[in-house]
Image (cartoon, rainbow, N blue to C red; front, side, top):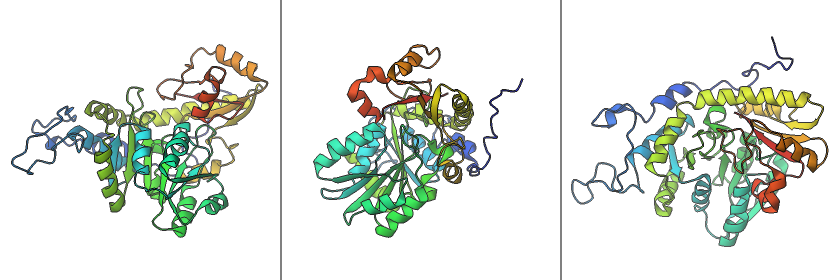
Length: 378
């Protein structure tokens, strides 16, 4: 029997899916010929040091912080999926944020989207600002506000789209054009965590850097903490390569192996996330106890058309408002049967953060607006 909440064709109106995505996820960086054993699955190279033929004469690796065979395989694969020349794997999403920010010097300016992941907000306010960087926040969904926030010293613009947790969508191409007209050397960074490489390619839309907390969708199995950074520009590659080694915030070979394995099912997982999220969003939108649903895949989302224009689909992230007071939300949370109450979004489990138990510091870590409840769908 057909459900009364009929789903739309998931591909309707969205950008055409990136060519050969699944094939590249399986094969790029995995070539058996790079190993003497001809292994079709990249081995986990746990060695910290590598033998040299002579002083300064090595086979591409000398110390695992500087480069590791297993990490190289992952970086090549992610670069291909992002449509990029280069990728860097870091120890976490915030390690990626830190590494990117270290391209700047004291006195340089950062303009950050005013609605971002709480850890990003905290890093810029509590650490970057105290290191002498000029940090400001602007609503980048409104191009005129972004334009007004740009200063002569602005060297970095940080965009997150969709935003966490209010699911605002930022026009990447429009932002990149405005920023680069202001200063062609200003770096535009897009946090692509919520979209994954499967649904959005920021570099193709004009961004200079695409970054992820790979802990979420890119790995997809709640067993790795990692960050990823993809670029095309040679100058950014040179600087970030130096910083990856000099700062040393690199992931373990085993984590690289796990994330590399996770990429092979990314296309399947993201399709199912979209399908399930759309079904849940439609169900919630039809429920009289729900005040409002914020999901970019719904026509009711104010930036639905923009989402279709710059993405190939939608992730499994939904924000919705329950009618009534906090006790109504608490009752709802207390009666959940499948959704797991956790503090972080690890994306293999259904997750519902319980605001009544978080306290003020917990609200800040989520950048939660009063009255919102987030649901992550599998």
